[in-house]
Image (cartoon, rainbow, N blue to C red; front, side, top):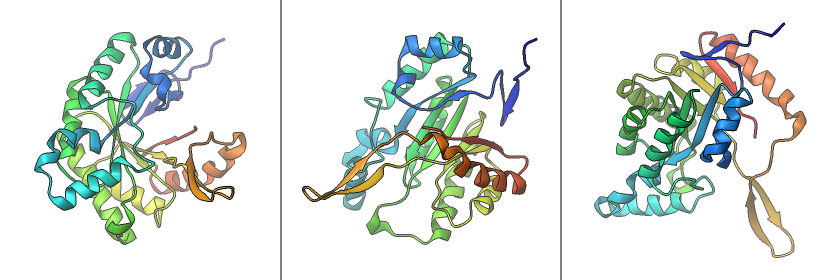
Length: 246
């Protein structure tokens, strides 16, 4: 007797609760086909960054905008899998031809701007949903927790009004109150992903210098995630939740 694993993630109807998160493997056509055959119900492509979308227009940026652009391009968050925005659209179309499962695209950036309009292009190219990842601002652009949350809500609202496909927001652990922020996002967001993963910061004593590296999640870390997920669900039962495992 086979188990019925049908579930719903936002308005996406999935045959199993297994979603393959963004990683280099989802860029590979044979691997995407193998993932679907193995039971994956949805596949998430790597992040398309704000920097890649606005790179063609850097000549029109203000001096301050150029400084922010260069800073972001050298940040640990900016590790692109796509050559440029067009490469992302091409990969998205190919992924839809390869598989029958939903393909989720990720938009990653730092500030509100014209790059957000690219969400509509991703939807036109066949994205079944969009995941938004707004990462922390640079140190020189320090903002209060309230200002950060207000901007995130504004960005999510702007994207949700421009697309007809589901929108999910990836949240990190550094917000003042995850449950409160999730409730604010309810009006325009189908779900949230807990939690965004950042590189590990370490100090090399042999040089010395600061080292940033991406580590795999520890096998027993699921217990650290369940508590916050249950708390968010208790306050926002209508919001779809997804735990990020690296």
